[in-house]
Every structure is written in structure tokens, then in C-alpha cells.
Image 1 (tube, rainbow, N blue to C red):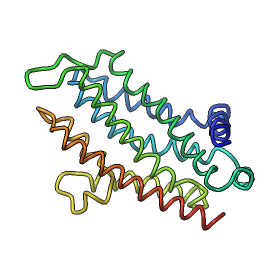
Image 2 (image 1 turned 60 degrees about the vertical axis):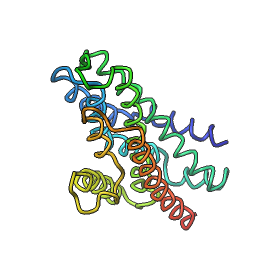
Image 3 (image 1 turned 90 degrees about the vertical axis):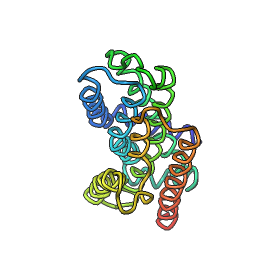
Length: 231
């Protein structure tokens, strides 16, 4: 039931044309990022992941808001609160992963990934780190987009405010030397790490992954709690 409901929401997203706006925005961002010349794979993908974070959040909000409120409530009654919430998250992750594949492929197709210089990671390793960066950005985007959806914020205006404010705070508080970097997901921190030569040790990346998991888990737990109270 969960997979069927997730599939239905993805179909509604595509057939209703709601996917076009975040898709076009994401492609424009990728074109701007990778259209200026060649860069090392790790740093190029790290920057790309950071820039695509608000697109992932927007895409998640669009997925969760694709069906009318009455239809969403009927689905919640039919399959249960937990399955309905899980179906929305699954649909958002599936849409985000599809776009992640595009984000990884675009710079390779455009020839924007240059050969590594001494001390830099290989192209293969850079692509692998880029996949990790995009997956972490996707997880954070799904969390932010979930709390910005209409089922939580009640109105489109409130949802846009949450989405924009959250995206700005992730950038501002994620800058080096900010007063509360741990209050936001490590989107900017991962981007900085991939730009370093040489890249940090695996232990440093494990710390970033743990940071992302804890932050996303806390935000999604809050989302689930709000949805339960409004069932």
C-alpha cells in the first residue's frame, strides 16, 4: 500500500506538471555551475550539492502538496497515518534520487570535470564523494520540504516562508565561523570539505554523515509529531 500510494503521488507530480518548475530551476542551476569551465570532480560536485539543496526541498514540498487536502486525508484514513506519511517521504526521495542521477551526469556530459592535479582525488573518487554530498543534501532537503508542506503549514504562503527561511538559514548558519553551525544540516560543511586539497579523512566524512542523520531525524520526527496531532 505504501509503495502504491507513493507511486500514485509521483504520477500526479508528473502528469499534473508540478515537477516542471523545480526541474527547470535545477537544470538552470546545474548549467550555471558547470558551464564556466572545468573543475576538480570533488569540489564541483560539492558546490553542486549545496546549490541544489533548496531545489530538493522545493521538490519535496511539491510532491507532498501534489494531491488535494481531502484526498490526502482520505489516504490517511485508508492506509493509516504511518503509511501515508511514509509514502510521501518515499515519493519525495524517489523524485530526488532521480534528479541526483541527472546532477551527477550533467557535468560529465558537459565536460566540466577536469583531470585531477597533484594532491586532488581521482575522478572516480570525486564522483563517489559527489554522490555522497548529493545524498546528504537530498536528505536535508526532504526534511525541510516536509515541514514546509501544506499539511504542516496549512497555507501556501506559510509553506513558502518556511521553505525560503529554512534555505537561507542553512546557508547563513552553515558559513565558516557562524554562531550556531550545528543547528542546520552540514550542506555547506560538506561543500567546503570537498573543496579542500587533499579532501578530509574518512573519519571527518563519517562525522558529517552522522551530523546529517541526527539533524534530518530530528526534523522528520517533528514533522511526524505534527502530522499525528492533526490526524
